[in-house]
Length: 159
Image (tube, rainbow, N blue to C red; front, top):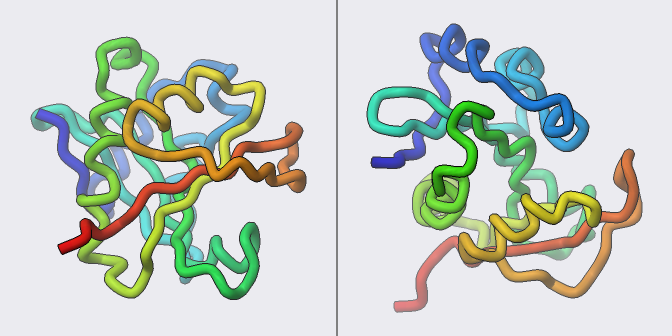
């Protein structure tokens, strides 16, 4: 079973044991960067398969002003990573598909979860699409390794 929960300090050793492909590190935070990030606007989450931590991501509640402008009601998904030993097993897709519902309680005042994904990172783009994110049709041009698709998923189901 795949679950998502907030990072706790006692998760540090397990997160630091996550292995990433060299290609992944261009597009995400290293495990060391993830555990050391204590910015006030960042909330860290871990992804578990059963009782084993297999990935992580950050939610940036100031993402909307950086990427989308001040009037946007969205948080930003950053640094999504799955351990290379667990890739190709559907874990990333499943984690993306439960991401919005897993974080919605923490971010009740926000409507959308946004992310940017590098236009060269087709595998990640397809994972986000299959997991329920939609491409807004806009590009973010301020990325360090080229243009990025802007994608979003609704945080709260309509009642």
